[in-house]
Length: 192
Ligand code: TMP
Image (cartoon, rainbow, N blue to C red; front, side, top):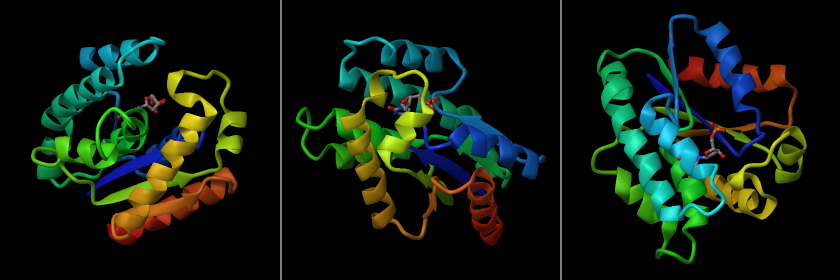
C-alpha cells in the first residue's frame, strides 16, 4: 500500500512521520524533494528568492520522475507498505498557487503534467491547520512559507481533498500530537 503525507509547512508532518516509523518498522519511508542530486537542485532553486515558478515546477517534477522510477514503482509493484512525505499533491497545492496568473487553471495544469506517468497513492493523510498556527510553529520562513502564499496552498489542499474524498483522509493537525498520530494510524490500518 502506498500512503502519502501532505500539509502546509508547520502542520507537523515531520513529527507524524517519525511516529509512523516507530509504528510501522517494516515499512519503507521516502520523501519529496528527495535526497538525490535532483532533490539538491530543487532545494537550491526554492531557497533562491528570485527563482522562476515554472522552473521550480519542472525541477520538482524531474525529481519526482526519478523518485517514481527508483523508489515508488518498485515498492508498489512489490506490494510493500510505502510512506512518502510530500508527493504530487504538494506540487498541485504549492505550484498551483505560485503559477496562478502564469498559466490557466494552474492546479489542473500541474495535475495533467503528472497524470500520464506518475503513480497515484492509495491513501493521502492531509494534516490540516490554520495558517496562523502553522506559522507559529515555524522558526525559519523560506520562500514558500509566507502567510498569503500558505493560505492559498491550504485552500488548494482542501479543494483537492474535497475532490477526492476516497483517497484523502483529512486530520485536524491542531489536535495533540498523540491524537494526530492515532487518527492517522487508524486510517492506515483501515486501508491495510
Ligand atoms: P519540506 O519542508 O517538506 O521538505 O518541503 C520543502 C518545501 O518545498 C516546502 O515549503 C514545500 C515545498 N514543495 C513544493 O513547493 N512543491 C513540491 O512539489 C514539494 C514536494 C515541496
